[in-house]
Image (cartoon, rainbow, N blue to C red; front, side, top):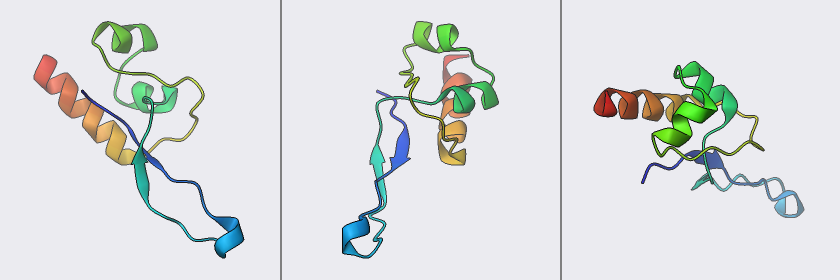
Length: 72
């Protein structure tokens, strides 16, 4: 299963510590559009979409492009 990587929340009460990455529920609309996909096409290919996300991470765009190359 293909999963998107997102940043973990910053812990402000502990001095603004950034804890790294975690797996999210799906890819954002911006990531899909940069990879050349629509939401409907991504869902047909079995790629999870999270409509609440607004961030675009280059790692996720590269992952989507690699998946598109595999599925052809």
